[in-house]
Length: 229
Image (tube, rainbow, N blue to C red; front, side, top):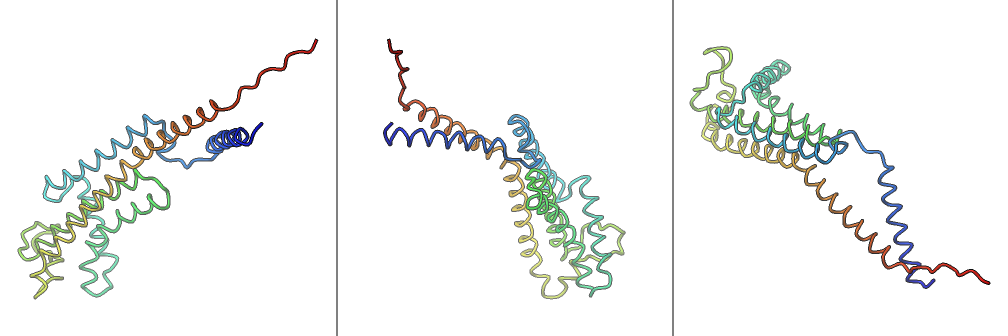
């Protein structure tokens, strides 16, 4: 057996061993555990939910039905836990908590659990919540929004931007709005990422299978020994 033949056989054995190792390696419980068809369905469904949340936010002037109540609860909780702090911190805490809580959940699912679809939903939630905060900031010079608690409730951002800072309310709101859409775009990418990675993995497996088949095809055919006599 010449050197080229031995090299080809060794390469074929390496490919077979690599496939066997991949089969034995434990996989985390996530969308990757689903069949390719269910993976595609889950990814597309999550992407549609992200798009629906964005559409509802736009159609309802930055208010998403059902989620708005959760956002309001988190907003008020932010005020409650910072009641002891300086008034500026307390006033800003509502909006900060409103966006930070779903964003933190998204980071947890993404980095700690490696669950892309759960992270996508949380980041989409954070994006719609940020759009709500942007509308709140933009309303500071006019104070036309109906606030929870009645007419006597103070407008957080009217207090925070009182004075010369009020002229920058639109610019500040625009920055928050852009950040909100970046979060929503990231959520959509995460929702579709398992689908794209799954297609890529399938193509790689097919390419390796073709390479293995080609390697097997060039191996020399050994003729059986003829019996003596």
